[in-house]
Length: 235
Image 1 (tube, helix red, strand yellow):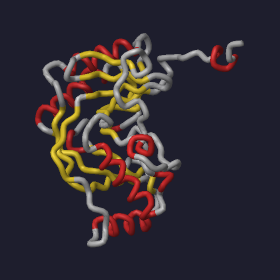
Image 2: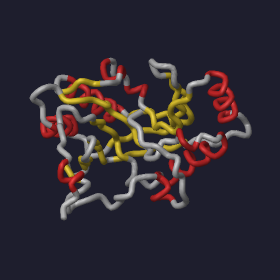
Image 3: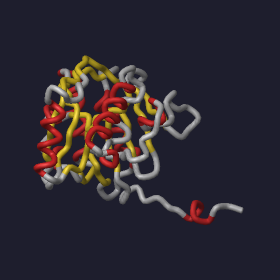
């Protein structure tokens, strides 16, 4: 017998939420990202606010404009990707960010190479006419805002300040400082995720016959150990 709930579920691409990100799971320093995030969560008792799959958000979350299909968004991403076989950047230490709401984010700072900055701006240009974005940075793109979120949703100013000072102090947790590159760009929807491989200039579907070598995506699955409080996020 078919599962009635599953069989009856219908997707509505126009109402789905999507995010475009640089997927970091295939990189050699992915375990370092996971370990550092876990250390921060444990040190400050913030397990429920640790980002479960570190990534660099490029655009979104967003919904599609009327008449626009996910295929047109994928075509826009592919157009922006022409001439880029990987994206180079530096991870240069801790960064503290404040959203336009009340919350703050603690992240790894990302310094984009000129090629990465060009790609980022091209993504915004290609997608802005196809989508309704829910993030103010997409309307005022700045490569200087790029980052890898570690902790999200910090609301109490005094607590945030205490965490920040402890993190950057002499007894704090050493940040990642390295030069890096990555070549997988993800388009994550409510029910499906696609990966664009810059090195091959082609789309891979995570749930089709051709998949990435890293299917489990969260830090506890890739790096060992457990961290049941981790969360996915579009920050």
